[in-house]
Image (cartoon, rainbow, N blue to C red; front, side, top):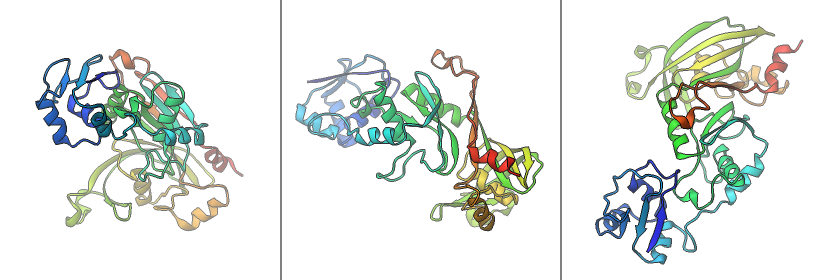
Length: 337
């Protein structure tokens, strides 16, 4: 018999979801069969998998140790290889942490680094986060079997700025909720070609070509081709001029919807592409600014405004305004003579 006690990072989820994470090599049919036959029990009683777990709940597995280890995915022990996380931490150990408490962490991601990887060989902030928490002793490799801290919002590889991360299950659920219900306010700075004096809310429709990984902006729904009507999504953005200098404009951008390439493509459609944007920008002018040190699109997630929270776990971050400075290249271009 194997006994497992539910930790704080495992509580709050459905029992069957927990079991599928723990016994990740077992077919779903096997897990439900073991529940029906009482080979897996919760707090000494038969369970169907739909129960919500609480801290210190006891889960008993009545099958051989070798069977348990086999379905955990590793014969020797039910843990994960942590080398990729340790390597990511040391590779990106100089990342600037903007805010951290027991449940959430906010990091200032430089351009050129992925928020989350799409290929096994890649390294991202997600791997750095787990490596950092392992190094600090906040989590153990055994705990990663059933819960992995994670990045909760994505920035494009070449966009810099604040990325929010859940250190605990409660933190991840909280961040996911306030992102989904749009109560987390997100602000960006960008530099665009030309002089643009604007304070305006701009709505459009966006269609993403997944094959080309590129989006097209349509001014309104009527402009969207009939064949793309179902896939085009509404986007909503506010643009405000911060300053104008040297025939470039610094804008502050507030996102009300967060769709792929939304700011970059919408500004290009307005005739003011972001400096350094190789996908939607002006290639000739980008070459000129590359000589001035521009390596990526000059788009930076600079401010987050958190909503009021009545939950004691998030009292520290309730109503907080977090900001991080723009990369040095922003000021260099605005101040050059």
